[in-house]
Length: 501
Ligand SMILES: Nc1nc2c(ncn2[C@@H]2O[C@H](COP(=O)(O)OP(=O)(O)OP(=O)(O)O)[C@@H](O)[C@H]2O)c(=O)[nH]1
Ligand SMILES: [Mg+2]
Image 1 (cartoon, rainbow, N blue to C red):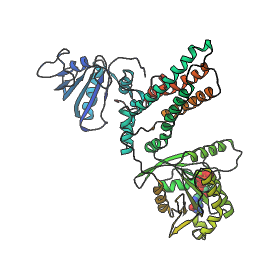
Image 2 (image 1 turned 30 degrees about the vertical axis):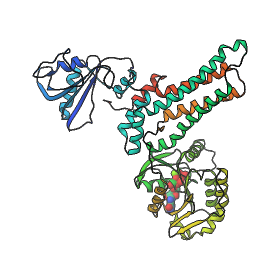
Image 3 (image 1 turned 135 degrees about the vertical axis):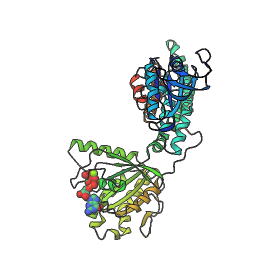
Image 4 (image 1 turned 180 degrees about the vertical axis):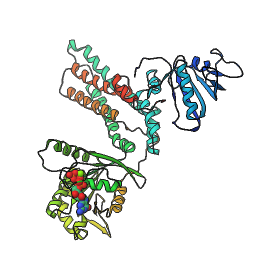
């Protein structure tokens, strides 16, 4: 897609198919002329008599003068339009034939079919919106629930851009303080007020961290609560994913190491959206590809809100308790929810009768250590509550389930536990959340550069170098709003839009 073209583009803006009415839009310097050339109404209309933002009723004709449809035509004058250019919108009857015919007529009269996202891209190029707002348009179109809609709307209204502006102005203060020092460096004076500098850095980094932290919730809203399915090879993880989804999504086999890459699927349980991630079984291996899969599994564990730790009852109890402890050692019980699932009850008649004392004895030390390690209070007595089928500890840190993934046994009960741990996603009126991976990554990079700035100052490194790191921070922030952007980035963003938007 070219970012400098100023020819006239056209597209059907409404969904494809038959509808009561449809809208065809045109944008670019010739859009008024082209629309007028095929439009007839009782009182003649010319380029000079057009009134912007007013709907005109009339007829559209083809190049031979044959009437195609009764339409409503609206003209917008630059810069007061979505794209910032002269543009026109034709509302016609929603037959696919009419829509396509009108489009064809516009193309025959000199317009060109728009590429995906080209309207919004033009809006961006003409400074009608920044990149975060342009991306919010795509989010808004695809939003499926209230929280998603709210976040996209806040972003579209410039909430996120404003946050970034505040951050930017803090950093610019910082830069000017430092540049002052650079100007005087010849005279070997330390001009800038170090306390003030440090305070500004502190403020900026708190601000950036607040935004990166919001990505966890933001991403959950956009893609569902992440639930990682982990455990030993052959524990039945892929079988469980299939059982949860009710379809044969992942490959299941009795060969250990079947799943190598992670598989993700979204599922709605009790009105909440979850994103299940099937991972490679964790085991010692020399296989390079499997190793990469296992590393990914660990990464997915750290990113998940809920962890389903799958234990294989077909193994000795020493083995599955060892696995359980291993899983506990790799999660943060104060931030993440863990469901330990004893699988393959069909092979183990005693399974449902596993003595809760046995579980406590085997896991208590690991659980207490986990809580301590993550800065929580020790629980004096790690107590269980077992009521009928429901087994969990009194603080609800871990729930326990006994299932047969293969035979679909007790899956509903497990789903209930998952739903229990799922968060209600509520977003405040003007709350700004980072939902976009591109923004998140840029913020993380900005934050890393800011750490370098701080270290540089602490270690008394020449201001010149520190200023360079500071420029990097500004660069990454600028890349979010699009002040600094490459055509590759822009193409990948706008390419994801539909045609007509
Ligand atoms: N009897 C019984 N077999 C099961 C159950 N769940 C899974 N299996 C079997 O266990 C074997 C391994 O299942 P998978 O789902 O591929 O296990 P996995 O954990 O995904 O294995 P990897 O991808 O290799 O890590 C298969 O032969 C399954 O049929 C169960 O509840 N009962
Ligand atoms: Mg598998």
